[in-house]
Length: 220
Image (cartoon, rainbow, N blue to C red):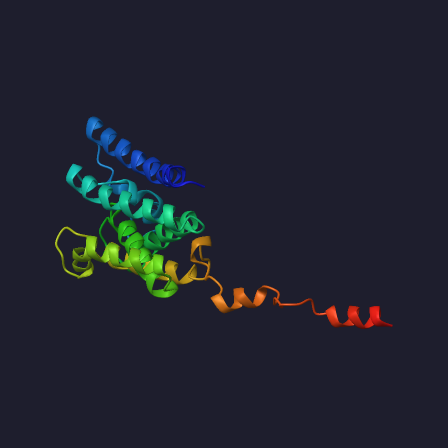
């Protein structure tokens, strides 16, 4: 598969997901409705629906935009470079983050895709740690450079911020990276050592090995 086609395909899922997020927020704004009740509300059965819906709901346009850009960058990165496990990794991060917030979060409504974003960020970083291929290490360094400031978001007692979603999303990303660490991509397969390739070739001789047998037969 060539680069341009692979890149286009890696955009499909992230753009569809972003489109759903933006469409929901646009309808919310136009209709002037409050959707916070669809967020995760910890340890209450009615709050379980937030595992599915909370990443799609945002409090305002700033909240939506601030999550959209890193979500697009990180998800495209995963779908492009880790296509073998991309869909499964996204689903696992998505579900584990929401479930963990429901189990351990404060008794408030938690909304927004930031938990998933932290999960994607942690997945890329820790995949570099677990796999230690050149590609995964380079990607880990890139996300560290781009999003190093995000590590402050997991600290507790930040007013108006679901730091639990950030922390638990990041832990979900670490777990997912570990879970799929052995499902490597084709370009991560190690190349055989040069001496093994040389040994695979049959040895070459100056003369045919049976030349003396032929000569002996001819003399008789």
